Structures are given as C-alpha cells and as structure tokens.
Amino acid sequence: MSRCSPLSLHTIVAATILAPAVSLPLSVAAQQYPVKTVRFIIPFPPGGPTDIMGRMATDILSRATGQQFVPDNRGGAGGNIGAELCAKSPPDGYTLCMITAAQGVSPAIYRKMNYDPVKDLATITLMASLPSLLTVHPNLPAKTVKEVIALARAKPDGMSYASTGNGSSPHMLMEMFKFMTGVKMVHIPYKGQAPAVVDQMSGQVQLAFNTAISVLPQVEAKRLRPVAISTRERFPPMPDLPTIEESGVKGFDGGSWQGVGAPAGTPPEIIRRVNTLLVSELKTPAMREQMIKRGGIVSANSPEEFSAFLRTEIARWTKIARAANISID
Image (cartoon, rainbow, N blue to C red; front, side, top):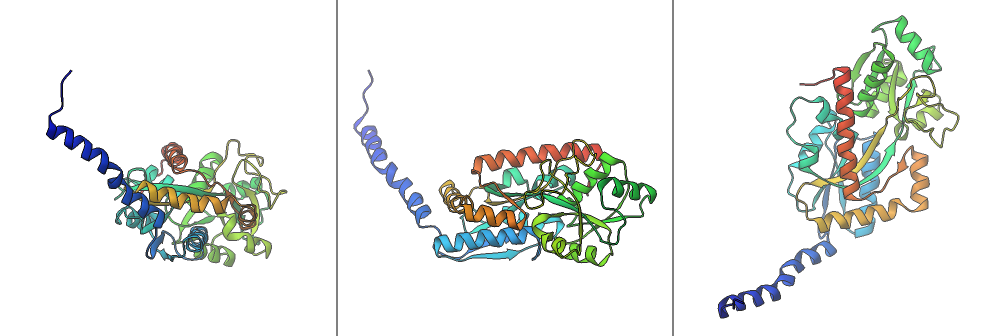
C-alpha cells in the first residue's frame, strides 16, 4: 500500500477542513437572499395575463422576504425581448423574470433567436396554467364553434383575429384552430393582450383566443361573447361553456401558462429558495381560489418539473408549426 507524503497528507487534511467553509458562504448567502432590490422582468406590456401573474409573483416575494421585487415590463417580439434581457443578465439572483407560453412556442417558429429558452434560462416554478376563451365581438352572428367555422368559410380571409404578437399563445392557438378546421382568417398582431382586447371590444377585429384571466371582466360585462374554452377540460368558473373539442374540433387542446425563471447559472440555492417561497404561497387554499377567480389553475411545481414541461411544450408546438407551415424570420 502506497503512503502519502507529509505534504500531500497535509494538503488532503486542509482540503477536508476547508471544504465546508468554501461551500458555506453560498449557502448562507442563499438563506439571507435577497439583501437588495430584485429586478423582475415581465416580457409583456402592463394589463395582460403575464403582467397580472408577474405582479402577483413580485407581491408574494416582496412580502415573504421584506425586500422589493420590482416589476420591469419589457414587451415586444412576442415576449422575446424581455426573455432575452433576462437570459443575458448577471446570474446572481437579482434578476428574475416571467417565463411564458411564448418561450414554449418561439423556438418552434422563429428561424433565428438570440437566446435559447432551455439553455439560457433557469426554471424556478410553473405558477399556473391559463385556459383561453375563444371570444367574439357581440355583434358577430356566431354563438358556437360550428357557427364561427361556417362564417369563416363563407368569408375566406374576411374575418380577422387578434393576438398578443407573432408566436404568442393566442396566435398559435388560432393557427392550430385554422389548421384543424381548414378555415382562413387574417392575423392582426398586437404588442400585448390589453390593446388587443380593446380593439376586439370596439369591433375592429372579430375574434381571438384570450386567456380567461385577462377577459373575464369583459365577458361578465357582455363586452365580449365567449364561444368555447381551449383546454380539453371545462373551466370551473364557467362550467356550462363547452370545450372546442366538445364543439366538434376533435383533438383540440391548448392554453397559455405562466412561470418564473432566472438567467441560467443562477445559484441553485437561490433558485430553490425562490421556488419554496412561491410554491408555499401558491398552494394555499386562498391563493388557489383567488387564481381560479382570476382565470388560472395553480401548478406550483419544482424547477426540474418546470424544465421538463418547457421542453415538452417546445416539442409540441414544433410539430404544429411544421404541420401548419408557420415560421417567422
């Protein structure tokens, strides 16, 4: 058996003693995190579902830590401007951001992106899934999915639909609807859900997929008429509203979602701390009830589960984009 030299033995002992001390500062830093204001990037303009959910997250984290998590709306390019800004920020825990359904769609349709949602963003938790309502202007003579399809077929390219931008969830849901039903409609992209809903209520566009969280007040006020829900399951606050699949479009199932992330390379201890703070609050009965009233269904999963979900979404929308021949330069 070989023997260690005094020097090598001393080195081994020193390394053994110092190893916990080397890892300790990061652990302590994570426990004390944050010690200053945290920027929280919301990659869509104020007023839409991402803004609503982002501000909910900042409120939870600010109350839980006693430090300010400041919302920073950076809309544009279907959510990619803000997401790229987050991806390229220092991975020190002092920049967080919303990761949305747009990050599940963008790799499927954009020929060139300046960041990779999987490689350049660290997932923290999927906050909620957001079923979308197929809504029409009240003056549109269509109250069912079959009537919408018949009207669109009678006027090829004569109907227009709003979205929150190229590659956004409302855009892709309608493109999937068009592909599965064979109808044609004109796409009118906006820079966010709020301006899109305003123009739909005024009648400048006829229909849209809108997240329930953003249009329930308009639906309740009868400024927009709900036709169907996008998910395979019915929406609890509107149990009588049929799904699109129930309405005859077999296999249709889709919706939006909202999660929290950070730049890739953010210390795992900080990722876990933020996850714990968010998930513990999101899983309370009061928060679940509040989320349903706002049009969402709480998810509150682990960073690993959110990462797997994101990869699945990208693969799913890639298939749809190829089948519908959708691509953006």
